[in-house]
Length: 472
Image 1 (cartoon, rainbow, N blue to C red):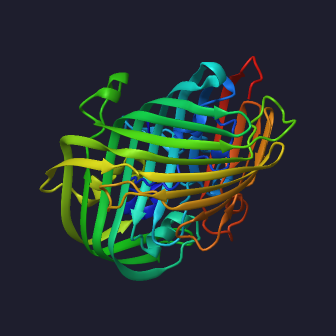
Image 2 (cartoon, rainbow, N blue to C red):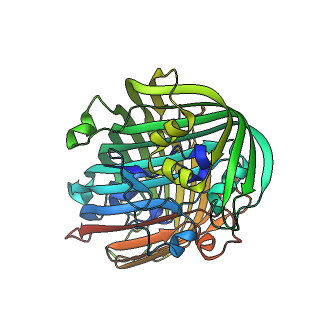
Image 3 (tube, rainbow, N blue to C red):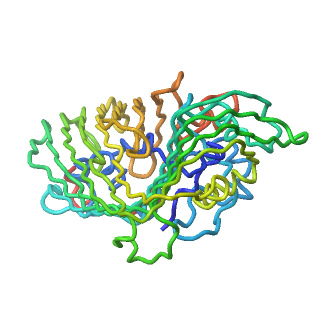
């Protein structure tokens, strides 16, 4: 089991506490595909009812935020850089310098998600009943009240020669990292099917959550000065710092039993959804989705994770702290040890914690304008409120996606509006047979001028078997 390797460097020394925020967990573009199979069930569990597949298996899928430095350092940093072992102290994948926040302003929004083997099977005529299982590791980085100096330290680093000198002060800056593993059972049914008129689908996923660790840092107030050490390297000095930080438990040895151990966090969650497909196009390919309009509504991630007492919490003040790029990297590699080294461990108190998941309302409308050509509109709206680190947040997202889909090839061009950004982002995804890859903000990867710098990047490999009878 692996943990989100903080892009923490974002929040500079603090943020690095390895935070986590989810701001759109879906594979933007592919999430609406009729060939997404079990991966679409995370967006709406009812979507897999009446499937054209006898079975569908996700071998592996990976989703993370990156910026355009990803390609610059691709040869020297591993592909899975945002993850590291949650239960070991060693850094597995090189320096944390590739991830990017999805939104602008004073919020940090980073994620990484590894979908491990999952799948479903269809039962009965027209696969009116579908039973599936899901497994995935999720890591979130979330920050609020992020000062511009710390944001720039993340975006440009303190040793790339791009940082500029600055001074100022800030208050109420919080970073939070959370990573956990979930296993789920999905049940979807199609109680109503009137050929050529309407199909009604309903579904639910029940999830067991296994928390790895929750770490947070709050800077209540501080002065800062960013100044050069030499031609390319800067240092960030903090003065009159008032802080608080904590973690749910120290790093521990890991085994499969850890997924259900009381030494780690545990919890439960549920996804609920319904889908209606209306109409039919005449002389349509029998093995492809055939409807004029599809409307889906789902409530996802309704649940929470609870950690038993065993963690530590610290608070205090410091007259002066000096932060270098190497210290940022150290905190990114091991948030707890890095914070303890810099801020100290005086007068600890026990820290038990409950975190609410990023509950969202997911609504999408899919219209087939021509055979195999669709336009999808998706709205992801957060339905929980709270402050860090007591909850994980989902930014409101709206996307409009033209899509050409076939059994062997698929192409999407999602245009996405993220709450907090001035302009929409334009991405793309392609699928050839069982493999697919996509980006939510391809322009940010090609040009430094495009803001925000972050993009969701994902890829995956899947297997499926179509029904022997072409009754779809």
